[in-house]
Every structure is written in C-alpha cells, then in structure tokens.
Length: 255
Image (cartoon, rainbow, N blue to C red; front, side):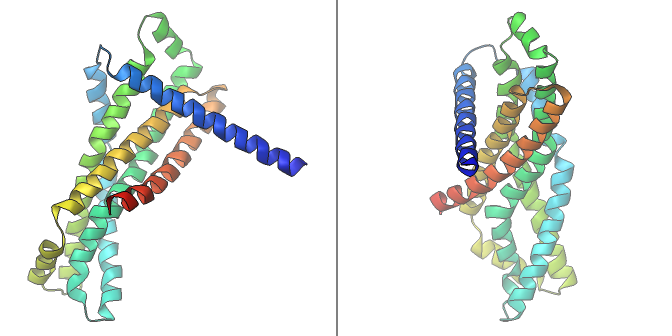
C-alpha cells in the first residue's frame, strides 16, 4: 500500500505542478498584450541573457565543432568519405547541436540566475511590494525575461553554429589534411537555408522554455534561502529535460 500511495501522491503532485505552470503561462500571456511595456527591463534582460552568455557559447561551440570533426573523420575514414566531414558537421551543428547545446548552456547560466533572482525577491517580499506599488509583477519581471529569451536564443545559436563550423574547418583542414576546397564545397552543396531556419525555430522554442520554467520556479519559491536553492536546482533540471524532450518533437514535426 505504501508503494501505491507513493505513486498516487507523485502523480497528483505532478498534475498540480503542471496545472500551476499552465495557469502561470495563461497569466503571462494575458498581461503580454497590455500596456505598459517595460522596454528598459527588456533590454536589460537581453543583455544579461544574450551578451553575457556569448563567451560560454563561443567556447562551447568551438570545441563542439572541433570534436565533431574529429569523430566524423574517424568514422568516414573507414569508408574513404573524408570529404563529407565538413557537410556532416555543419548539418549536425545547424539542426541539432547548435540550438540544443546553446540552450543548455544558457539554462545553466541565465535560467538558474532568473530563478534565483525572482525567488529571492519572492521570499524577501519584494514582489509583494511591487504589487502594493501598483506595478504588475508579470509585466515587470516575467514578460521581459521571456521575450528576451525568445529573442536572444536564436542569435546565440547563430554564434554557436558559426564558431563551431570554424572549429571544424580548423581541425579538418589544418590538422586532418582535408582539402579546403572540397571541405567548403561539400558544405555549400549539402547545407541549405532550411537547415539553418530549422535550428533557429528550435532555439526560439528553447528560449521560451528555459525562461518560462526559470521564472515560474522563482515566482513560486517558498521556504527562504533553502527554498531558493531548491527552486534553482529544480529549474535547471526541468528546463534541461524539457529542452531535450521538445527537441525530439520539434525534429519529428519539422522533418
């Protein structure tokens, strides 16, 4: 009985959490189209999510492209198809690795910070103070972060893809002695704008996921400093898993 009781309580808790998240999204959308629009907050969050995440995205993208070139070269060398290293790496970056890994990096850096910041404001009653001053917390805190995540994630993905292809070019041409003309020709031949746009659409969805989850967990934080820590941990885990699940369904729909 204890086992079935545990399963039941877990299922009920999951459904309650899902319903609370749905209500949070509905409230956010209802305030999205109402004035005022806090542009200063929006640009501040765009700078925080986008500009300050560029360094970790550049570093991750560079070494992802480099290791992808090494791995694909090892596999294609068995069949004498080393010329396809460039195109295969570029396709992998544009379609999957770029948006997914960039989103996971931003989740770890910016998504966790969103939860911690809003959660601290919740447990110190700063959000209640905003309400008392007739400032809607959804408009002031939530909407700018969600919009910034949706806007900046495709831009960060472009950076990730670009530096990843440069890294794969360096490894393929300079270290593995693949002819640079063939390397670039295969990329031009097999990669088109559809691959890029597919990755950018995914990135926008991932930006929405990480910002919504981060804001939701922070907005509903309880339990003081310990609660903020738990909310931040849960935010990163839920966002990361949700991004991977959403990636599968988006890939199945778009391909």
